Image (tube, rainbow, N blue to C red; front, top):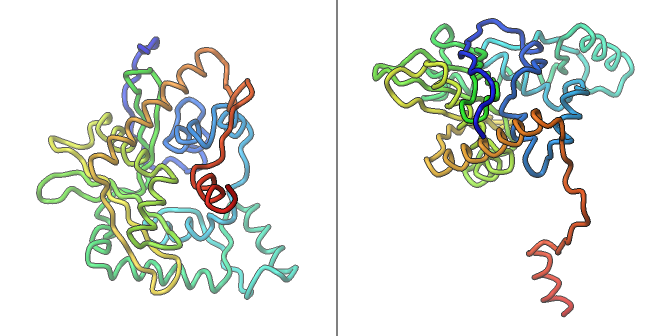
Length: 287
């Protein structure tokens, strides 16, 4: 599809509040593109975009960890209770949400501080996140020239250029497990390879990369002691497949916006086999 609209110039915005960034309806983010593809669909994406839900409480620990690691994030409210079972704890939690803060139990607050300490002590992640030597949560907007779709991304951290002048885009994520097998599965299941490719497109479209190809680094950290850290740079095949997913999603989005039709999974009866693993197991057990 050829873009039918004028290509708007890239834009880099500092200090944009996270709520304003996520509320933007004139552009699409990496998470939006991923929601358009299986196991999601355009109809679900449009409903979720038009009916935004409050942030999930499961993300509170991640937001708090981002604050201590990046120096940017929502204000925290430490609730001095062992858990949320008592009514007074629940009242303080709800009041914190109403005030736009992230409520944390005291034990969880201690945990995210310990996580940040583990990051600072890591020989690579520590220097990478040195305060004052990078930019946190800078908002980048650009237009995809193939589809005319306005895109946006918000890198967690972009440290000051190294001696070789190469731009590094850093994304910090907390996880249950950070061993190589668990991370490979998480990257595929959650489309992180598409996120990396999309962010690299954004910084290049905005001209932030200089003369060298930028790098994208994931910093994964376990949410259990000793809060192990695992830095990951995806290989070229992973990034190429991520870019291909993005292109498919961008074309779907452009077509939906143009036609006003946001399809669900199917408008016909689907012929559905068993999963291959289940068929093999039942063949061995019963056939």
